[in-house]
Length: 115
Length: 116
Image (cartoon, rainbow over all chains, first blue to last red; front, side, top):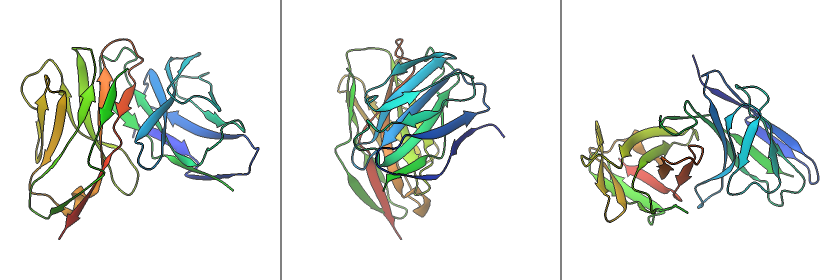
């Protein structure tokens, strides 16, 4: 079955460490997105990519980095510059980078905790 | 910039009753999509219903329907015959049709509880 796989499900990070969250899709979707979810704030866009080797900052990109070397993969690195990284992270994809097809597919998320 | 507001952090409904979740949005665009997503305790986001702004007819999906008021920029979700499985966090979301990469803008969410 096609879908989005996020790993790991739970991740613990020490202060000052970088960590990378994995997001893989086998849907042949062009566009991929990373959202951060905090209680009472809904989902906020971190980065998005419309095509391989290209990505744009979202609303809260500071302290995060991404790459899009392959169509099916869009890993997110949470750097030590991110002041409050404890959150739930959701990856999503969309078949169409122009917004003409409105369907989103979400992964099951990664819970990141700083210890 | 577009914004989405859900003014009800929590709602409660009795099983088999009807409940309406509110959503308002702000945009200067005339063409866009609106969505309601459900997030159960598993945290998996599930699309409930979508509405194209150019369509005057309100979208319906089984027990779920919307009241889309374009001039008022309002997009409420009605759940009829509520079931225990409807208990979840519900998010309203906006998607521009202009070239913004297809990103979704979410409201803060409404947590719905269903009482047996």
